[in-house]
Image (tube, rainbow, N blue to C red; front, top):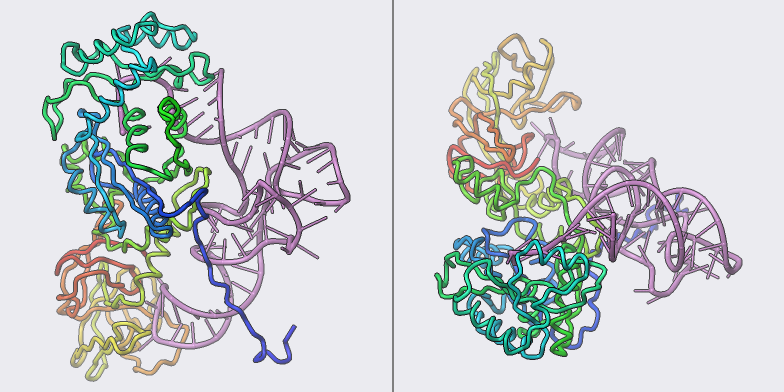
Length: 484
RNA sequence: GCUCCGAUGGUGUAGUCCGGCCAAGCAUAUCGGCCUUUCGAGCCGACGACCCGGGUCCAAAUCCCGGUCGGAGCACCA
C-alpha cells in the first residue's frame, strides 16, 4: 500500500496479550485454594493449578490457601509437608494460609454428626460388593433407614475405634436414581488402621476427599475453585453437602487434562525408581518434578507464562515441550553468557599460523559483558567437534569462531588468515589445548562427554554453549542440559 | 456399558456465552530473505486451521439437530 514511501509506513507491532479470562461473580477479594495430595514434591502438572490460582488471587486481591489433603494415611510422603511450600515459593506462588486437613479432623467429625442428625447420612456395614450391587440397581441398603440416633452411635464407634478397618463406612444420602451410579449415596468416611505421619494412630475414621473438600471449601470461605477436569464428578458429589447445609457454592472451573508425553510424573513410578536406585533423587533430571526443572536451569517464570498461555478451557491438550523451551529461552537468553564446548572432541594442529589469539564475546548482543581472550602461541593444537571435522572433505575452508580461518588438510589444518572473507564457510567452535573435561547430563538419561573452555571454570548457572545448547553448569566438570 | 465433557493450522492457543468488525489473531515449529565470526538473538516474508452432514438466519467458527472422533469419571485414592 505504502510501497512508494516505506519510511512512512507506520507499523503497529501487535503485542501478544495472553491473559486469562475474567472469573464469574467476583465481588471484592477472592479466596482460592490449591490442594495437592502430599504424596511427594510438586511436578509440572501441579504447577498449572498453582499458577492459575495464584494469578487470579493476584489479579483480584484476596488470599490463596494451600490445603494439604492428607486424609489417606496410606498415601502420604512426609517430605511433601516441607517440599510443597518450597516448590511453590520457587514458582513465585504466594500462599497466604496453609491448611492441613489431618489437623482439622474434629471439624469433619462435627460436620458429619450434624448431617447424620439431620438424616442426611448413615453408617453402613454392608460388604462393599453388596453395597455396589445395590447402588447400581438403585436399591437402598437396609442401613439407609436407620434412625439418626443409631447412626450417631455407629459413627461414634467408627471414630473411637470400636469398628475396625473395613467394618463400616459413613454414607451421604444423595439420589439413588442419579444417572451416574458413582454419585448415588457416596462414602464420606472410612476407617483406616494405617499410621498417619503426623498423627500416628490417633484417628481411625478418616474423611474421604469429597467430604473433607466440601466442608473445607465452605469453612475456609472459598469463592472460586479452579481444578482439573478429573474433578467434575466430585464437584457433583460435593454439591450435596453444600445443599444440605444451605451453604453458598463457590464458582467452579475445571480445566482440561494435559498429556505430558514422555515425562515421568507419577509418584508411584518415581518412588519405585528411587527405591531401586534408578533415579538419583526427586531432582533427577529425567523426572518431571519442579526440582528437576530447576536443576536443569529453567526459570519459574516459564511455567507461569506457559500456563497463562494455555488458558483454562476444558479441552484436553498435549504439553508442548517446544513452546515451553522456547519461552524459557526467550526469558534467559539475554543474560546468558556464551562459552565454547566441544562434545566428542578431535585434536587438530594448525600449521603456518603466527601468534594466534582468540577474542570471543560473552554475549554478541551485549559487548559490555566482555570477552573471552585466549593466546594460543605459534602453530597451536586445539580441539574441534569430531562431527563437524569429519563431515568436511579435505581442502575445505572453515572458520574457527572468533579465531581464524583454516583449511582442512588431513588431521591438521593450514592457517588461512583471520579476515572474514568467505561468508558461506562453516563456522565452528573450538577449545584450546588446556580445555577441561566436561560432561553434560541430558534429560533422556544420556550424557555427552567433551571439553569446555578454561574460562568457564568458575561460572555456575545457565550458559549457552555455542552451537550445542543451553546448559546449567553445576560444577567444573558437570552440567545439566536445559534445552537446545 | 453408563454419566458428563470437548473438537480452530504440525504444536499451543484467541475468538464461541451476547451470530455480522473473523475470507479467522497470536505464539511455536518449518521454509526463505536480511543482519550476525553460533545451528543463539533480532528484523522481514512464506506456509498452514474453524471435525463431518443437515437446519435456522439477510448473515454461522459462533445457535439447533444428527454423526464421527477424542477425553474424563464410574463408588472405602486425591
